Length: 280
Image 1 (cartoon, rainbow, N blue to C red):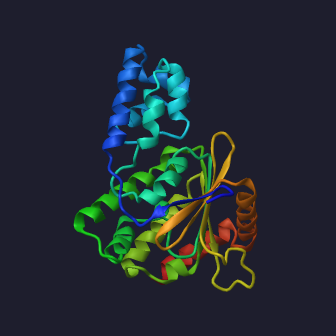
Image 2: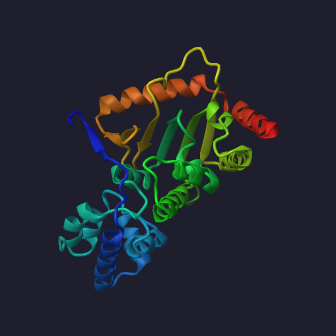
């Protein structure tokens, strides 16, 4: 697709993680050959030594510019530059979501509007497993375990990236529906309230009774990279769209900004979540 809109694939087939571990091993070999510690290498490519370790061990997806920055530090062998496009995420993360997840891992700002379900970054394990076990076509036990492992890893972003600003606008009915039952919803509400107390996380509730709503075209996500470039992502039944065109992203930013003014304030949102928690 043109105009900065790219289909992120179709279907939910997971990607293998062998390439991620192999890429990390190559990084480690080149770093050690250059005589650099993880801390020294990290300082030259703009990462902490812990992030370098996660990449080398195949636990973390490298950000889009990592290979190029690393080539400049590690002798410009071309190995990382050629290998980077082949790197795949761990099992359980849908192939069509992988490109967005790679950007998500380095974002300095991440904004999410959801009207279908509580976003993955905010889900509890019982809530997520309810979604997985009711998915059609049905998933096998190994697929469910892989999907939860991948989701749990993604959720670490909220605490591992304290300098990233996370904003969520969630429809009130997502909690009123009581997906998984009252006990699952109680735990979910407690979890969202705990996350909303973090300095870098804001949660606003869009009330069910709302005369004007800028998000009627569906869910959206927006993010800003460390280079201050903005991307958007819109997801449907069997795939997603990654949007990079500045004009298209700007239109979605305008809608998100309007929704922030239409949703309840942060204080009133927390009050409503507490009220719903008390009703269970």
